[in-house]
Image 1: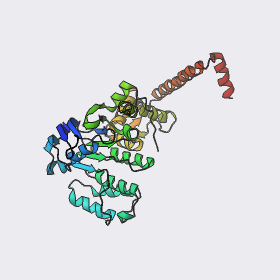
Image 2: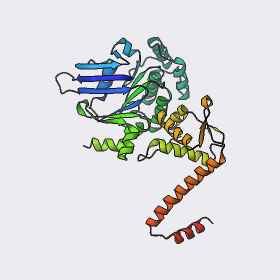
Image 3: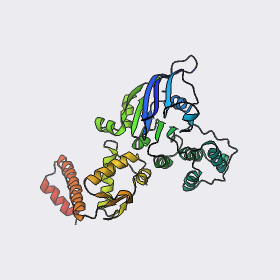
Image 4: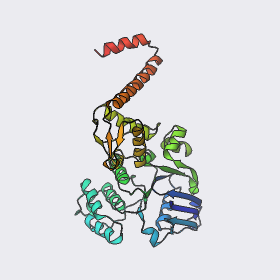
Length: 233
Length: 119
């Protein structure tokens, strides 16, 4: 069964050129999927449409069989590109906030992941560095027992050592039948965690997709090298 | 803890090689339990399905043995381990021969060098 189905999806902002132009895409259960494409190709737009933050101009989105709405939001855990925390809060306050908001939030898991990273739950958010804030946000997002995780650029703002920790946290904290969509342009870093990939060109056109391992076998190249070739400037 | 994978070969093959190496160097002893799919996926930051794939390969050649819900263990069959050792060593030798012949060094000269170097 597909956890996410997009049919004939179109989105343009104001009168501009379409960001997504009749996009068709299906994501099966239990897969980690990379949504890979150059800046401005519509990766974040697609994620926001699935998260329900944007409305499509036309087309259909089904998450676990539900159209985007309260039922889909209850099973989708979304990590935005930017942190959205109010800086007046403490980390512990955020945990309670998430526990109130999401029935599937596992506060014990969140606390144990924070402990692993040595993040003090009584710390004020404004006292944390940008990278630490991103880690806190990822921990909160991955501590939900969601069926679909949408991670928009989860590793862009952190150092290479923390990237590994974050990727490890991602692969270690999802249920086997849940799926994860990761958008990024740092392909070499996320490549080893991906089951499947989509190369998204401008207008959200799918240029190439399939199993990451099969693509490597068939081309004798890494996804990173394939990407450079496909999107050569 | 960083695990580096070369980009030109499947990750599961490299993972399987790495686990094999850990057995051959004695890091994992015969009969010892090896980490779970999830643990290894987290440690190496790779997809759990890739780890599963590597385990399937290693179960295929008998180096690791699944014991149901108990987990996976390094085989206690020394013959299997020695066969893996021989295979890995021969691969190293073949790679060496390929490289050294490209330098126009003869087999005799290479053997002499090995003997000198290993003194």
